[in-house]
Length: 310
Image 1 (cartoon, helix red, strand yellow):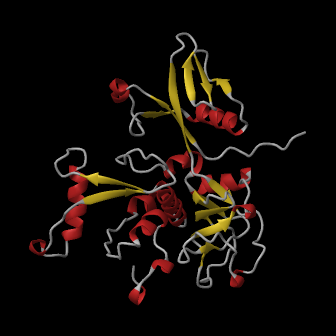
Image 2 (image 1 turned 120 degrees about the horizontal axis):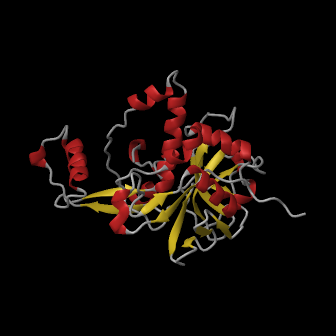
Image 3 (image 1 turned 90 degrees about the vertical axis):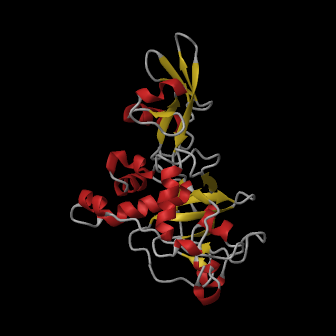
């Protein structure tokens, strides 16, 4: 017999609602996606992983997980579906070369972008794949038990970087269960959801900028929160704000969410820790040529300039 398909990842499934009816739903993923219940989502994910194609969700609806369409069997009317899941891959085996020796990576990868030290059993999230299909850039989502925490050699990182895809494999059911536990149990997938006020991105693997307009009721409050936080310790008469953009990087947000959940899980009362959790506003400047790298990959010491600052 053939090899069994990979186990279902912690994904969430949505169906497209008509704009005029969005107000009737308590939960909406912008701009128009309505979540399936847990049971239906699990069935859709199982069919998707097994490449089953069409399944009958209810007596009235059929779902095609390949074409991503939900169809009313009585009327023939179809709506789009959305699968939202972080691409995760655990390390399958140790790297074939010692980290001190470096890696023979593609020549078009910038020299200041680090390689990632992989450990068996860790789960990493792919932010983007190289054109050769053999290398990928990712971030650590959940470290393996007993993984080292010391600082690796220059050019290497334990948190994010480039790695060879052949050193990874699809996560096992037990590994996914551990990840889901770290995210808060059966509802763990929702912990990875970006903020409700975010706009929909074209590609969840790429960072996107969204301009905040102080004249627009939708973004006015957000604009003023950022402005006031930035000016909190400054003399406003000495500064002029030309524009404020929201950076939306889904993969970095999800990596942050996992780390936040893991930190809170260490407390005696995890729910109380989540309520106490404080997210601080931090501002910094950096050379213009470094900005795209930070937006896409996050902060990395290899991007540091003079005095080890960004």
